[in-house]
Length: 396
Image (cartoon, rainbow, N blue to C red; front, top):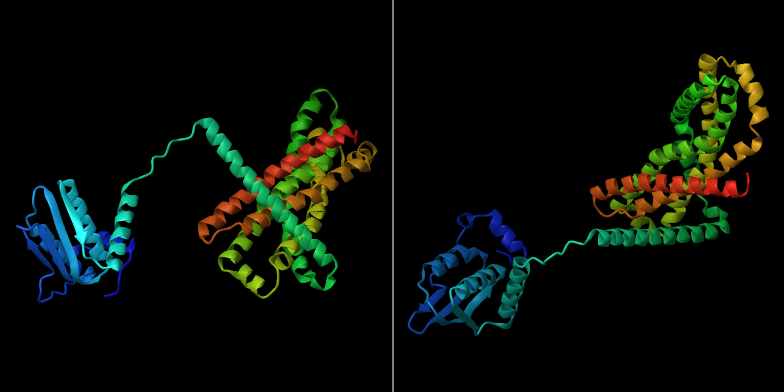
């Protein structure tokens, strides 16, 4: 039988009873014990195949109640981790009974194996004392972890920026088919869901605001409120959130599976950088698609508002469309649309970063996909708050 190394052997013993191991007996006993001289002589093969026989002999002998017991290993022809393990366990057991066991004349390799087993037994037998952190320490630890992740994210963005600058001077390296695929999958195929949700948002907002306006006889001002809220805030923001859940998670899952399958490593081996083939087309494709989706969302949000205004407030479609360009300047639409490219960069970069950070297991794909969506939505809201403050300071 082959040699077993620690820590495989203890796991083997737990899963396989000693009685189930085939025993190969030798003609000569492997243990000779002189009770008068307090000396134990080991000989023959001390390995996994003879383990039951060795345990039976060591368990049947009568050991002294105190003093020192010399163990001579000069006669051992073969020893693996099983033999070293049983000797170490036997010595520790006698030590607890007050008997000091002295190993003598063991080969250097056998001494090293026994020392290794002894070290592993001491390490596994002693659990480190863990002192729980106070609540302030936990907050500090989590903060440091997030700052470290954010530093990695900034380094990732910097590498992508350098790669993009390199590709500017090499148009032949641009991946137009991959770019078109990203725009199609994450732009064109997202049109139905964006239209439906935006229509519902327009209906809900008109209903909630219309209830208050109707109490004061100011039904016509629903056009002002709806136009400003949809074009400037809710259209870009809700579209970005929906795309973060739909597209950002897809980017992370796709890249994570590719990393687990070592496809990214294969690209690096072939001299094709992952940024050139996988990352930049996704980022640029979403950079193109999200502003178009925002315009699409604005249109259906306003349509939903018109439908609800006509049914609830008695404002005809003609009156709504006639007043809309008079009270809603083009600047409102452009300010809302200007946020979309920034949101696109956030969603795509976070999704790609989390995909690259996936470890070599399936659980990591799910965890990083969740992180991707949560972080993208968080940064989108932070960016939207920043734009609101900036536009307010600039009086826009």
